[in-house]
Image (tube, rainbow over all chains, first blue to last red; front, side, top):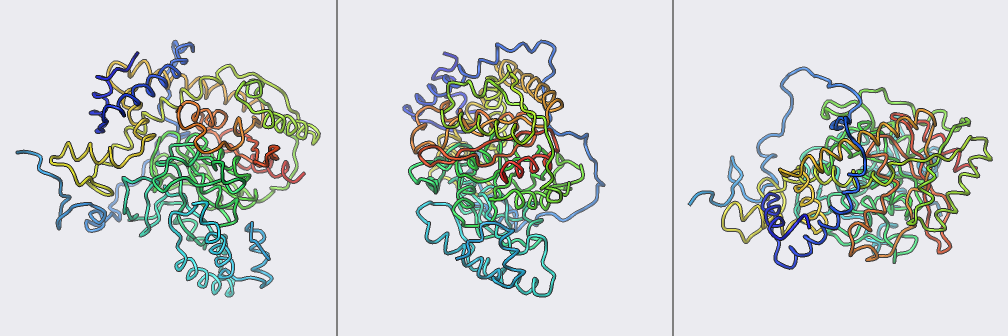
Length: 95
Length: 473
C-alpha cells in the first residue's frame, strides 16, 4: 500500500481538506486503486525523454507594459463572504 | 411548428420574415420550461434574453445584425459572464457573480448572439456523467434513465432537446465530445490555445479548451470562427490566423484516414459501438477515402498520463477556493486554518476532493519524479507518436466513447470505471490537437453513438469538412 492512513491525513493537510474516519478510509482505498492503475506508466521506457511541460505551439508573445483597465477595489471585494471597506476579513490568525 | 434546430433554419426564417428573434427566444424558453425535469439550466435569463431579442430584431430590420444575430446560446457554468452567477456547479462558489466577461462571451455578444442561460455540469468540469453537480444530475433527453455524459452534459442536452441553438462547453479530457456522443449532437474540441481561456474557470490549464456543441457542422464552424483567435488576456493563446471555417465546407476531398486497431479490439467496447464504427469505416471507404488500420502501442498509457497531470494541475488551480475572496465560507470555523479546511471540506464534492488529493500526492516530495515527471515524459512520447501519425494521415477515426450513455449510478462506486468513459477522447487533450464528435447511429435501445475524427493542430477546417461530408451522405 503506497498510501496509508497517515499519508491521507498529511495529504489532507497539504490540500487544506479534512476527512472523518470513514471518508478517510474510502479515500485511502480509492487513491491506492488509482495509483496502482497509473503505475502502468512504469512499463514505458522514458530514458532520455524530456518532460513535456508546456503545450503552447508558439514562443511567448510579449506585449507593451502599459497601464490598462483593472478590477476596481469595490468589484474585487464584491463577492467576499466577509469584508470591510478596504479588506477581506478572515478569522483571527494569532491569539 | 418550427423548431429552430439550427442557425441555418433561424437565418432563413428571419430573412423571410417568418419569425423574429423574440419568437425564437420564446420558443426556446417554452422548451426549457416544458423539460424542466431534465435539469439542464442552472439559471435562465428569460427577461434579459427577450429584451435582447427585441433589440436584435431592430438591428436586423436596419440591416445591422452581426454574424450571430438570431443565434441563441447556452453557456456551461464554467465561463464568466459579467454580472451573472457562476458556480462551476459547486457549492464552494455559492452566490458568486462574474465581474467581467470571458473573451468568448465578449466575442459572441459583439456578433449579436443572445445568451439564454447557464447550464449544469460536473463540478469544476470533473466527471463523465453530470452526476457530480451541486445542482443534481442532468438527464439524457434520449432516455432520462441514462446520463447525458459529462462534464458538459447539460450543454449537450440543451442542444439535443432544442433549448438553444448552440452551447459553449469546455473539454479537458473529452468533456464536450463525450456528452455530444451520448446525446447525438456535434461537439468540437479545438486545438489547445485556439480559443482564449480568459474567463474560463481553470481545471487543468495545459489541457483545458473551450468547445462548441451544435446540431449542424455549419453552426459549429461559425461559432468557432467568432470566438477563436489571439487575445491580450491569455498569454497562452495562439496567434495563428483564424480560418474561415464555414467557407468551402461542402468541398469533397479524398482523405487518408487511419483507425487504431486496438481501439476496436478493446474488451471494454460495446458491440453496437464497434459495429457502428466498422460501418462508418466502410462508408468512408465507399466515399473514396483511403482508410487503413494502424496500431498505437501507447494507447493504454494515455488515460493514466491524463489523470496524473490533470489532478496535479487541478490541485494547484483549485487552491484559490479558500473561503476568503469569494463564494462559500464555513460558518463553523474558529481560526484561519480551520476556516480553509472546513470551507473546502464542506464546499467541494467528493470527486473534486479525490482529484485534489491525488494531485497533491503526485506533486509531493518523494513522489514528484516517479509520478508527475514520469507522466510529463510519457505525454511527450504520446504527443510525438500522435503527431507522426497525423503527418502521415489526415485524420484518426475512432468511436468517441466505448459505450453509449450508461445508467445513473452505474459507475459511481469505482472511479477508474468512470474514467474509462474518456478512453478515446483524452488523446486529443494529451496531445493538444483538435477533434470532433459527430452522430453515428444508435444502439438497439435507441441511444446515440458518436464517431470521432482527430486531426493535426490547427486543422479544424479539415475536421469540419470531413464531418460534413460524412453526415451529408
